[in-house]
Length: 415
Image (tube, rainbow, N blue to C red; front, side):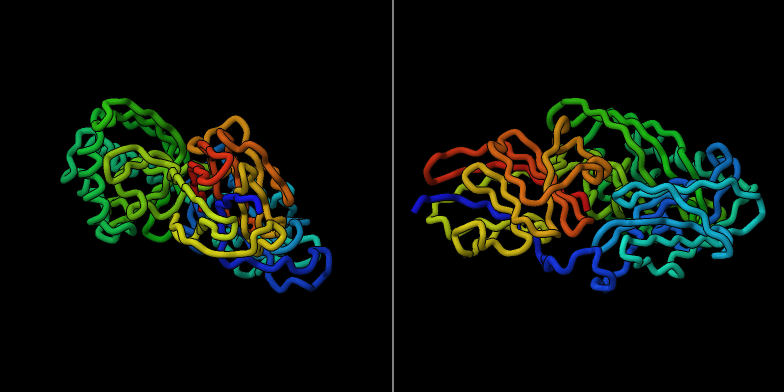
C-alpha cells in the first residue's frame, strides 16, 4: 500500500448536510443578522439605543449596513422600517447577504428601526429583536473626543505610560492592568512611534461614545532595527466619567497595546485585518507558522483543530478520502482536498499574502465544494466553515516523495 501523509484540518461540531434549502420548513434555524453598523458604529457596542450627531453625518445621511445569513440557502429580500414597522422599504443587498440602506434624518425626531431579512424559502430573522431606537442630536462631542485622543496619542508617542493611563477607564473591558502592561511592553519593544488619525464617525449610547477612526502609523522594531508602517480603520469606545472621556474598549486593528492584543482587544473591525501585533519575544506577528513532519502507514494522521488554538493531536481514521468525516480537510501528497460537505468550502486566493488579507477579502471570495488544488507550495487558500467562519492557510513548503514528509504552512483565524 502506498505510504502517504495527511495533514488533517478538523473542524469541530460539523453539521450534517441536511435537507436542501428550497424545501420549505425543513430547517428550524432562523435567518440571522450577522453584524449591523449604523454610520460605522457597531450595534453590538451600542445596544438597542443609539444617538448620532448631526455634524458628523457624512452628507447628512444615516447609513445602515450589515450582513444577513440564512442557515440554508440564500437571502431573498431585505426590508427596513424606520417608523416602528408602519412602513417598509427595500434595502440594497448582494447575493452573500451584505446589505445597505440610507435615509436623511430629521433632528430631534426618534426613529424605531426594524430589519427583516427573508431567505428564499420564506423564513425570516426574529424581526422584533432587531429593533434599534435611533436619535439624531444637534450636540457634538467631537472637540472633547479629539482632545482626549490627542492627549493619549501624545503620551503614547512620547512613551509616557503613567500619563497615558490617566485617560483609561477603571472599567476598561480588556482589564486596565493588562492594558497598562501591554503599553509598557510596547515601549520596550518599539521606538520612534509615530501615530496619526482622523475621525470617521461618532455615535453615542447612554454615557458611552463610539468612534470610528482612520489611522496611519510608523514604528521601529527594537529587536530588528527595522521600520514598519501600516494604516487602516479601527473602532474605540469612550465612557463619560464625571464629564471626562475615558477609554472603555478597543477593537483590532489596535493602535495601543500591540504587545498583548488577545487580552486588550474586544474583537476585530469588520472588513479590516487584525493589524500589527507583537509576540512575547518582541517580534511582529500575524499568521502562525506550523511545521509538521510525519512518517506513517497512511492511517495515523496529524490533526489540526481550528477551535483549539492550533494544538496538534494524533488520530486514526480509515486510509482513504471517501471515508473522511464531515468537516475534514486533508492534505494528501501535495494535494489540498475538500471533503465536499456543505458546511466546509474552499477557495484559492490570488494576489495577496496571508498577512495582507482582510475579513472583507475572505467574505468576497467564490467558494467551492469538491475542489482539489495541486502543488500548493507558495499558494494561499481560504476556508469557510458553516457559512460564517473564515480561516486562511498558506503552504510555505512541502517536501518528500516518500516518508517522512514535511509540510510547513501558516494559518490565520479571522473569527
